[in-house]
Image (cartoon, rainbow, N blue to C red; front, top):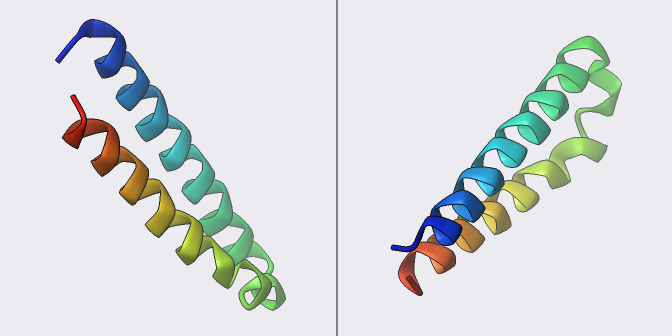
Length: 58
């Protein structure tokens, strides 16, 4: 795997973790947002699929 691909995967992982952490914080602090933020689970699934695609196409 090239260095560029590794950096892209690392960037995707860091961005995803930060985003999901933010969503978790918002859901914890503002429970009424839990339903609208339920779409975050779908985003997380897409994120995992993208990372798997990048790793598979190396």
